[in-house]
Image (cartoon, rainbow, N blue to C red; front, side):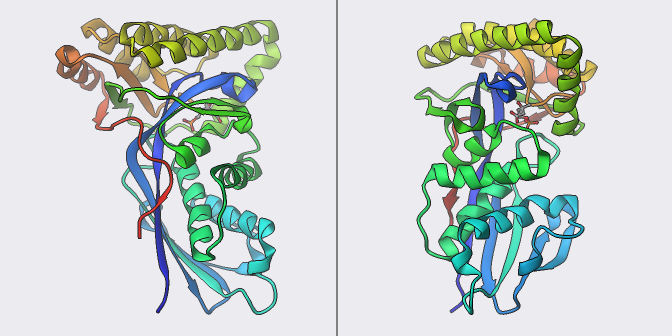
Length: 330
Ligand code: PMV
C-alpha cells in the first residue's frame, strides 16, 4: 500500500524584538493555532510533483536531479529548495536505485498574506514529511538547521525565528540562527490580532532597515540595543503573567519599530485605536509594512478593542497562542 504522510506546522506571531533579532539580539515569538499542512508520498516517476492550490500552484513538475536549477515559481521555491537541502544532507535516498519520485501537496488554514510565516511553516513541514517518509529520526535542531539553510538560500537574510516557531511551537525566546531557542513556560496570552489588509515583503523591509543602518549606524545600533532591553524585560513580565507590563513594553517596542520606518499609517491607526480603547498595549507584529498588529487586552476591553481595530480598517483574526510545533497528523 502507498504510504501518504500528512504533517502540519503552526503559523507564528512576533511578540517582541523583530528586526533587531536579525542583528544578533533576542526576540520572543509565539506559535499560533492556525496551521500549514503538507501531504507527501513517494511515486515511481523520478520527479517532484507539486500542488498548492492556496498559492496558485497546479501540477508543478521538476526532475529530482534538477531540483534548485532553472526557473522556480516563487510559490514553489521553499518546497523545492527544502527537498533539495534534505537530499543534500541525506544523499542515500537519491543514490542508486533507491530514489523514486515525490508527490507533494500543501494546504493552509491561514492566508499567506497575514505574515504568519507560511514559507517557513511549509519548509519545516516538507523536511518533517521527508523524515517520516524515509523513516529517519532527526532532532528538532536538525530540522531547524535544514529549514534555516533553505530560508537563507532563498532570502539571503533572516534570523530563522519563523522556522523555530514552526519546529518547536509554544512561545520562544530566540536568538538569531538558533543560537538560543528557549521555550517559555507561560499562560496563553489574551492577544487581539488585526490584519491590515495588505501583504508585506519581509526581504524588502529588511533591506530597507539595512540601508537606514548604513546611513545612521549609531542611531540604529542604539535602537537595536534598546529593543534588546525591552525583550529581556518582556520575557520576565510574560513569565510573571504581568500583562500590564507586557502591554507597556509592546508600546515601547512599537515606538522603535516606528523609528525604523516599518509601521504604516493603517497599522499605526489600528494600534492607537486599540490602546485608546483600553488595551494594555499594542504593536505591529513581524516585518511591518502591512501584515498584522497585535494588542493585549483583558476580557473587559476585548470586544471594544476589536471594534476599534475594525473601525480603523483592520480585520480581526482569531488565534490562540502557544500552539504545538510541527507534528505528524496521519
Ligand atoms: O516573517 P516576518 O515578516 O513576520 O518577519 C519576522 C521577523 C523579522 O525580524 C522582521 C525577520 C527575521 O528574519 O527575523
